[in-house]
Length: 401
Image 1 (cartoon, rainbow, N blue to C red):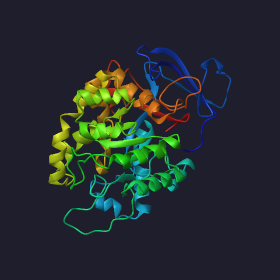
Image 2 (image 1 turned 120 degrees about the vertical axis):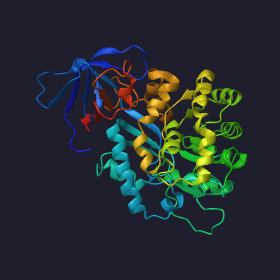
Image 3 (image 1 turned 45 degrees about the vertical axis):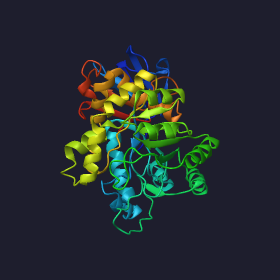
């Protein structure tokens, strides 16, 4: 991250604290990477950096709760057969791009490892705060199995996914992920768009396997995120202890109520389907994947409405692979179209912080991390500021990016 200033103060700002509908006006002061009471500002502090935000708006650093640092392309076999050294360097570049867009925290829900996390912690690359699950768990022939049905391949690098079957197998895999510093566990419990051999609606993994995974995670004080599209797959997941439903595009009213009953989160990823629909041909997206994408494209926004109306906490994610990563901010526009600016910003800040279990993220207040985005206008009056890369200053741990 480079040398961090001793202190930084943003003055004359309109402040969205991550929760409140009403903006406040005032200053935000960061000392040693943490927000403190602005009344402690010593105007004679020669080491302090001051930014006058008059006319601008400060929001908490954005959180992308469904990011794929190792998702360097749309070809899963290509990713899994590439050397990890190459994938990790591309991942660092992707994470740096995300940070510059204003995402000061990401949750990588299929990939990451202790080596990349250590390099980022040591400041070898500028990046968001990095929460990783390690490779997602998939059953044989499931969404995370990258092998085409008509080819015999041995793809064992497990950069983004690992094929693991059976109760004993998944228990061992979960324990090993926590040994390697995983924040949470990611599993595939329905078919997917990019995978070629699995129907998108069918539940995956047996109930015993899912319960074994969620039991191991709970005993570590963590949780499980599940890739799931259909009502059948979502019910299968949350009924067996899953806390976070990723995508959820085919959600129905009854299943939304079940999610609320189990206090499960929904992390929609509207950007991915929109991007694949517009840009899939240019990037060589497989015809099978294009057909699957059309099935879930139009239903994603309705799923968010159903979840909101049922009282489900709705987060924010993007799920962008390969060159589609530059559509990350488009995800904010798509979510604003459903929820409005206030709730879309809450999703990408306070709600995602709740999902991560981090009360120091996603908010502006004393004790919170010094992660901010300063817009040169008011996104509540001009929402396009949220998805324009221009006119913003990104601050990570009190340092201007």
